[in-house]
Length: 133
Figure 1: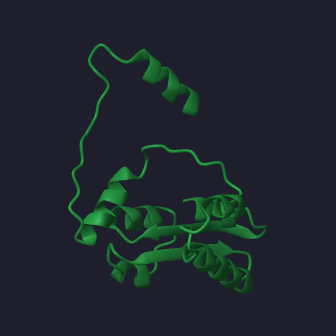
Figure 2 (figure 1 turned 90 degrees about the vertical axis):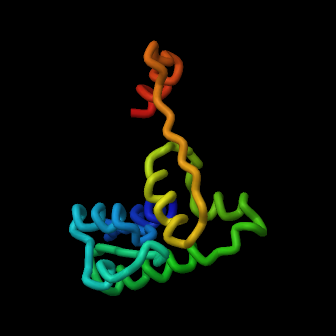
């Protein structure tokens, strides 16, 4: 998501998405008008990059930049990568299902635990969530 957000800030780029080709991601791409026949054929272990830009030349440049960012070796210097992407890291639970599906498509055993606010409510958590949204 950070890669998508970073390249979307490029002038002339209307939409940019990097996702695993899970069914949920394909549904989201279809809703955004970005689903192509090639993406329909992709599997959950395939990485999909889609760009809608003012020109084909710009779209090609943005795709190349996305490929570069995806293939960076972040294990060597995480700080450098974070600075390069120029993004503040925020962790939220949106997309967890898509991530779980992508792992399962690759044969990784995943244990998913659903958590809900207790019946009496957790006012601190609710207040934090209100600030986020």
